[in-house]
Amino acid sequence: MTIIITGGAGFIGSHVVRLFVNKYPDYRIINLDALTYAGNLENLRDIETKDNYIFEKVNLLDTADLERVFSQYSPDGVIHLAAESHVDRSIVSPMDFVYTNVVGTVNLLNAAKTAWAGNFEGKRFYHVSTDEVYGALGDTGLFTETTPYDPNSPYSASKAASDHFVRAYGETYHMPVVVTNCSNNYGPNHFPEKLIPLFINNIITKKPLPVYGDGLYTRDWLFVKDHATAIDLVFHKGKDSETYNIGGFNEWKNIDLVKLLCKQMDEKLGRAPGESEQLITYVKDRPGHDRRYAIDASKINKELGWKPSVTFEEGLSQTIDWYLENTEWLEHVTSGAYQQYYEQQYAVK
Ligand code: NAD
Ligand code: DAU
Image (cartoon, rainbow, N blue to C red; front, side, top):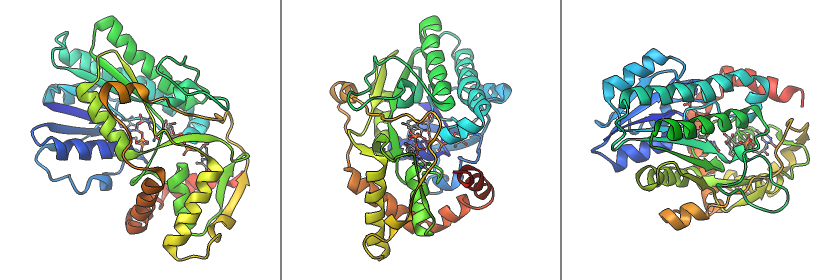
């Protein structure tokens, strides 16, 4: 089997590529990635020389190059993760999200449709999406697969649009599609613009920890390797035209999560208890900030037998250890353009 995994140089994509390359030596895994600021081949150093792994630097907006890859490798499956993924960037530059997440996804659907030419036997187009398409929850309730779409940020609106296109290609052209909507991931290789890796980096360097608004926003956190195992399961066992929600059964208010992170890091860094908490700084809120996300993952649990493998405390501890052991990775990704982004994003808050 040949599988194109898009966004394989990014955070979640690199864990999916590693899992597939190691677990399925008979498969040919094509990592298709444009290497934007978020794509980093250092994430894949340990598997890059494997015989069943190929990297293709391709932008989803380059339709000719996409067609070239599909005709060169004749893939049986596509697992689509490539996206602009950061909500704060989508507020500043929404068009980047329209181009990559919407137009890029439709370009990829077209490339697959052309290559498969109506013969969908043994084929699968798997679209990786987010729980943010469902909007915001109040104090109670969970997102299920039938929760109406209600996106609030340019990022979530672009992901919602891409989900609709994938579904439409399933209905209209009978393309075998499957979609998953997952909650917040954390773990190794996470770019330090998102809450957990940003705060780990700031604790290491003793910089302020910018908590948006009142800090009482809630997210449902899942260890990235557990998301990768869910993707493996859905790719192989999920039903066509179905949606599966994936989540950690693990809700945390931001401020409680930040305090846990500070506690674990003080212990690991040999700092006095409470030292890192003093870095917490409340800053201006994110516009359109969704109050609470929480996933009901009972469908994937009941139908495919998936559940998370680590507790949040264990996963967070493993994550911190990874960042403390991979200082070179952190230095590389936080040099250059990152500094400029950081100053623009946090100067005014
Ligand atoms: P990421 O930002 O870390 O990685 C995105 C990857 O896509 C990068 O390697 C980048 O180079 C590539 N890419 C971006 N634009 C491209 C283009 N035009 N052409 C080709 N490649 C391009 O993202 P992530 O956090 O790993 O998220 C991966 C997917 O999972 C996204 O679709 C995202 O919406 C979804 N998701 C993420 C989370 C999360 O918590 N991070 C949760 C649920 C769903
Ligand atoms: O729910 C899934 C989504 O999770 C994915 O689809 C997105 O790609 C991913 O980026 C993530 O979106 P969030 O906006 O929830 O993640 P982020 O890490 O940016 O923020 C998590 C929470 O922390 C959110 O309530 C905003 C808050 N926050 C974030 C940053 C970067 C802060 O308080 N301060 C910060 O500096």
